[in-house]
Structures are given as C-alpha cells and as structure tokens.
Length: 188
Image (tube, rainbow, N blue to C red):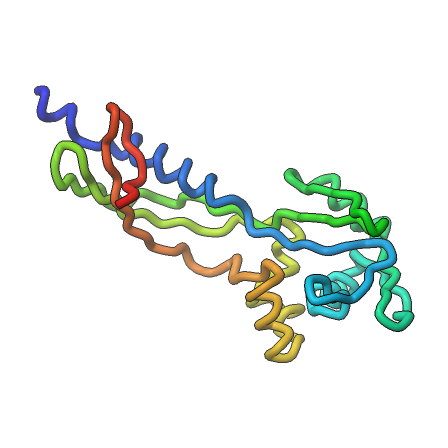
C-alpha cells in the first residue's frame, strides 16, 4: 500500500506540466507607436509592422528620414483591450511600447508516466499553441505571413513572435523529481 502512494499520478503529472508550460510564458510581439526612430533595436520597416498595417491594426505615415509616425487604428485599440496580458509602456523618447501576447502553450494530454524510482519519473505529454486574434495574424502558415518574402517570414519567426500556431500538437518528454514531498521538473 505504501509503495502505491509513491507513484506519480497522471493528475499530479498534469499539474506539474501545466505549471511548467505556463511558466514558459506566452509568445509575444513588440512594437512602438508615436514618432518611432529607426535604430538597431527598433526597425519600423520590419515585417511585423507591415503585416499589422495590412491587417488594419497600425497606421504608419510616410517616413521622414529615419522617423516613422505610427498610430494604432480604432480597430486595434479595441482589440488590444480584449487581449489579456497586453502591456503598454510610455518610453523616454515619447513613444509607447506595446507588448502583446500572441499565444499560450496548452496541455493536450499526458500520454505516459514512467516511474524510474520512488523519487524520479519521466512524463510524456503533448501540448499545442492556443493563439488569440493577433496570434492568428502572425501564424507562420497563414496567408498573410506566406505573402511575405523569405526574409520577411524568417524575420517574423526569428524575432517578432510568429510561429506555426495551428500545427499539430508537439510531443515532449520531461524528467520529474520528487523533492520535499513535491513533484517538479528535474533540473539535472
């Protein structure tokens, strides 16, 4: 009987894996509005700005040298209030920085729990992205992203939060360890 209590249950594995997925945070996109100056760190001519302009979320005006007046549309202002976790910061240069969550990782299923010993186990599970409306816009397999050239798509995926949000679930195996009576992702 005591030996049976030493087994990692599927429910306990689910709690640990769900917490781990949540701790990884959402995929995000960052952009500025206001009079945005092109720099090494901020490139208003990058694909995520163009994509959001095509979707009717940003209104850039004609560039004036290295500065780009960029504003939110009425549609985007409403949409951003609907997306939990949206953050806006007023920058020292007078621009506003927006950090918008695009998608969160969600557990699909715990497919296998294998006990190695009483204090160690491996857990096989599947997870998938759960995108919001802007995440759907930046889905790497979507028609808007596919309409960009190779460099634009690569930049979106590499630096601006685009991903294959509607792909099949990912399969993962993690090691768990029991410390102080609680199961957690093994760090060794």
